[in-house]
Amino acid sequence: MDKIIRTRFAPSPTGYMHIGNLRTALYSYFYAKGRGGQFILRIEDTDQNREVEGSSQLIIDTLHETGLIYDEGPDIGGPYAPYVQSQRKTGYLEYAKQLVAQGDAYYCFCDKERLESLTDENGARKYDKHCLSLSLEEVQRRLANGESYVIRQNIPDTHEANTYHDMVFGDITVDSCEMEDQILIKSDGMPTYNFANVIDDHLMNINCVMRGAEYLSSTPKYNLLYDAFKWERPVYIHLPSIMRDATHKLSKRNGAAGYGDLKAKGFLREAILNYIVLLGWSPKNDVEKMSFDEMLHAFNLEGISKSNAIFDEVKLRWLNGLYIKELPFEEFVEYATPWLDKSCCRGRFDYAYLCKLIQGRIDTLEDIIELVSFVDKFGDYDLELYTNKKQKTSPEVAKEILPKVLDFLTAQTDWSEQQLHDSVLAFVQQLGVKNGIVLWPLRVALSGLMSTPGGATELLYLFGKEESLRRIRYSIDLLNK
Ligand code: GLU
Image 1: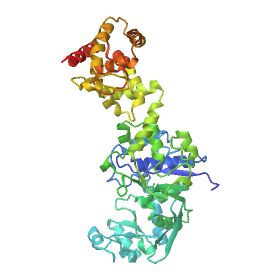
Image 2 (image 1 turned 90 degrees about the horizontal axis):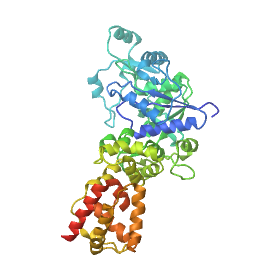
Image 3 (image 1 turned 135 degrees about the vertical axis):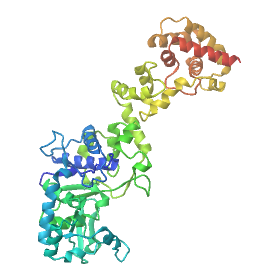
Image 4 (image 1 turned 90 degrees about the vertical axis):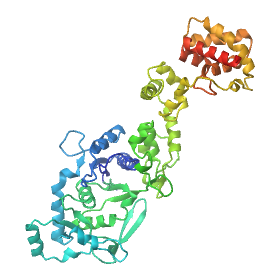
């Protein structure tokens, strides 16, 4: 294609940003921007019954947060205003009237009762073109009477095959007789999605349409509209579905399906984007961890798969863990602070120090809550924790070592991290034993746990002198019971 590529993201504001939608946005953005093209946002809010308040703003905010900056919008509502279909309502009617004048659409006055009584030979409901035969005079009279009407597309009732090429799914064919005379303009004067998407894609010069595979079979109807207007059809790129498992689509009903849900579970923006891009597309070199820029440059149509993608939270966790580990420390502290505030450590301990202990040990920020809960798990514990063959320790060894450690620590006046580290190691040397003989029992005595983020001297510093000595005394008592 020698024209500038123009893609669009056209979500309906129905409540949240499903990751399938976000993936469409990412692919559309990458495909255009990676080739010097343009990307726009169009809010498709013509089905006002389904509209959830605040969701247009959520879509706009999510695109800004994820760096999917759209190129243009109408000249109203400030710099970030996207195109909004409800604001363009009157324009669609004019185009529908043009189709009526050409015979490619017609007014329909059938009421709900009649429509509900219609079924085709397979039991499916299909409109029977009843109003197509109304005379022009009758139509004029009923319109003048203010009767409620819709405008339907007039699809030839023949077995003519309608074929188009999809860049992912190949040639798609649907027979005319399988297509219903779909509604273009509803009784409230709003266009349907089926009509507005064609009008807007044309008026907005969209030449690459990317959207979910559920639109594959209705696209021939859109093509008939393009043809009726003598407009050039766009290139179609339909995307495979994102599934929860082999048979169920990922949906809000079965867990975290939205970008916001994943953020709330402690996944990082970068990891979510990286993971979502891989749901239905793979790069040539099979590298999985990619920055935004790398994805933008690597994205291509050849890598898009026809098969549905299964959302795998385990893999997302793994990828997220990699992103967390490589965050600059200051940034990690910023991310971790709200989670520490939600944990049992709220308002206690030195957060930056805790962060040092946990950054390498979590896959999601939510993991922080469980990981730091060890600070409050101290109580009676199994003395077998003192047995560690490799370190050559046992409850007996602990019983002998811990009182000495207690005396030594009681005498310490400088409780700074470095000092503790140096003096504990010097003390071990003085005793003439291996590090593990002291450090293993000390860590168990301080925590009562098999494993902790951080070793003995780190726990000493974290808990502070008073609490550390209290825990060691408690453990000595437990060993002597
Ligand atoms: N508004 C449609 C949806 O949210 C968009 C489909 C399209 O991209 O054409 O599913």
